[in-house]
Image (cartoon, rainbow, N blue to C red; front, top):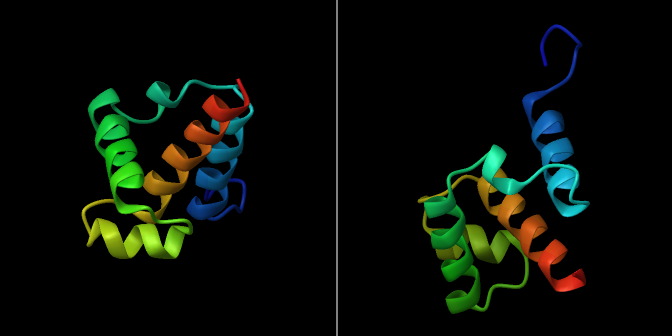
Length: 79
């Protein structure tokens, strides 16, 4: 990221887009256990926005981890 003058957040945003468009499987950037735990958090919390999800996660997961799983779940909804 630094070599190309990109912020880490930009790269992670690209990963989220790639996951949502099925270009890469989420398991290539995150463990299946983490995906399952965050999916459970999303479903049990009823959070609709990333801000609400961050509050529900209570610091257990990063913004980018939550965004990746949200992107993954959006892909599953479409398919």
